Image (tube, rainbow, N blue to C red; front, side, top):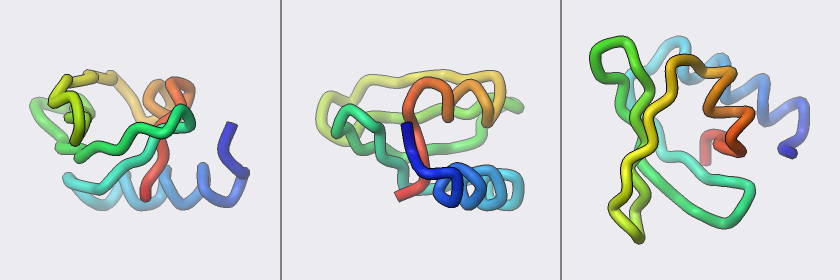
Length: 66
């Protein structure tokens, strides 16, 4: 899991910004957009979309701001 500091920064940034560059603990990178109240991350390599209901859910899935 990411450091407490990075998790804190991720929460702060995503609560203020509708878009962010993201990284995953497993080595993936993506772009996050807030769409219809959901956090949608599009993987930059695979072009797959991951949809999360909350910031906590995407952090639990291993995502953090890059």
